[in-house]
Length: 239
Image 1 (cartoon, helix red, strand yellow):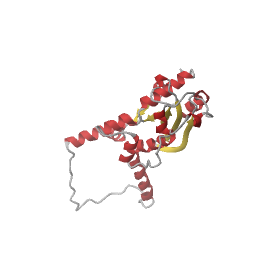
Image 2 (cartoon, one colour):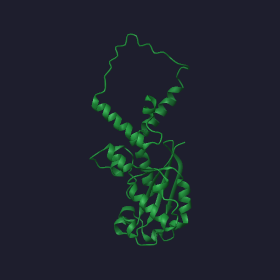
Image 3 (tube, one colour):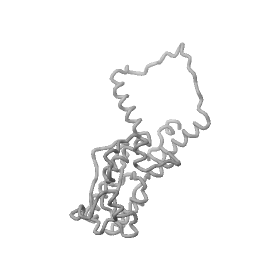
Image 4 (cartoon, one colour):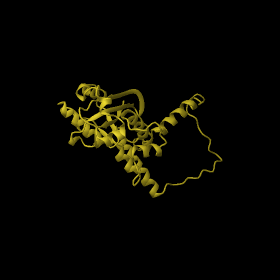
């Protein structure tokens, strides 16, 4: 079983080294590249003021969070949910920096996500696939026709859900789902056993791939190798 956790956070500001804290965590579980019904979502009291610019992004105020738990109160539950899963994060350096700082603050130094979990940064992946283009989450939603119409403000769980859909589409997951559905419908009418196709009388035209097309194919396989612990299936079939 391949387990991944798509993760996002909201914070009081841009830099944990200047004392900023996490105010919201959202996680979505993927198992074998399919979303399950398991999520993790928590608002947090940061015990400090929220920058005005940050509040304009996520809409959360100090009053909204005054009765929420501290990170120390939920740290164990959060780590239990994450487990040893591969983490899928957009601009991972930002979120992991904040999370590891929170773990240090509550003296859970034995667990630093940057060291204990494999991390896939979808921003880096998107820049490799779409060089020179905008690769924000909103831009990727538009590119891969993921509905983000509810995203008037940033929210950790909402953004994690959107990122899960974008990640699966970007790495071929949507095609897999469509093929699975088609295969399930077709199997009801499929003859049993191996069938021989009569190709007599067919004038088949074989068009060889160009060198550039072959190069681009290898680039896509490299991306799939990086995106999945199991690697690209096509390369395993060829070996």
